[in-house]
Amino acid sequence: MNKIIAASAIVLATATAANAMTVFDPTFRTKAGKFNTIVDISYASGDFLATDGNFRLGTDDLTYGITDNFNVFIQEGRTRPAVGVNWQMVNDKKFGLDLIATADLNKEDLSAAVGVSAYGTISKDWQWGVSGMFRYTSFDDFDDSVELRTSLMAQAMYKIDSKWSLLGQFNYQIDRESEDGLSLGDKAWWIYSKNLTFGVVYAWKPNVAVMPYITSELDTNVYYDGSKIASIDGGWIVGARFGIQF
Image 1: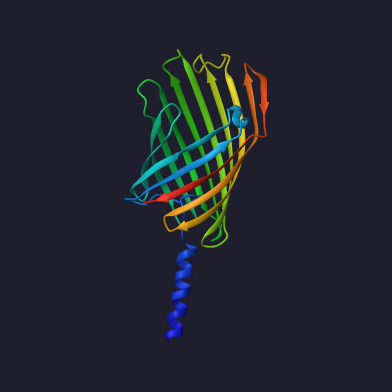
Image 2: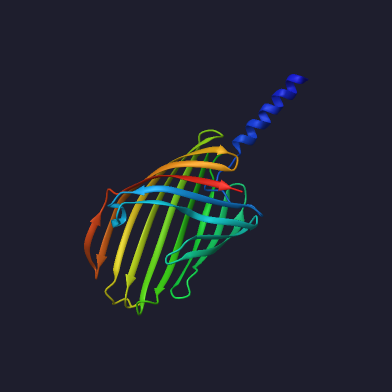
């Protein structure tokens, strides 16, 4: 009898550990009454997205669950911190679908975004997620200056065991910026960029996970008035993210 009880306890503990979820999981969603955030420490090479090399220490977002299916969050926006909402429209054991909306906390400039996120499980070891966001920004400092951004993301995670996971993520972004509003005939800047991220997730504690990662810029192409003026590739980011639930 004691052996049966001991064996049952081991099986239960193993199953509980195997079902543990981190904030990096594509299927993770904030529960009611809980907070979660991701702290990022990273360094970008000087040629990544045509920006100067720099260190970054910040948070991707701070999220609070109002209900299990509806949460609010604050994140880095286009011109100021942005506040957003996430509504989980569909949620079953293998598939979920969210609607997302954000707006920057800035009285002078207008910046807002809407998007959708789908995610699910293929097996107990595999998870996937895809999302798309569309952002509109108008700048008060420049008459009729408008920026449009479309962001697409796809990711997959493989659970090695109860502690370790592998995460791959592909991002594609299109930026359009013009000082003549939304006119189709204006001389606008178009920037197309693609990058790939690979991370190793370690569930350090039940509410804390660490993910060292590297992001590689596949290519960035810049156009103005229909002509290609720059093509950049080879940039990279190395860093670590700390996912915290509380």
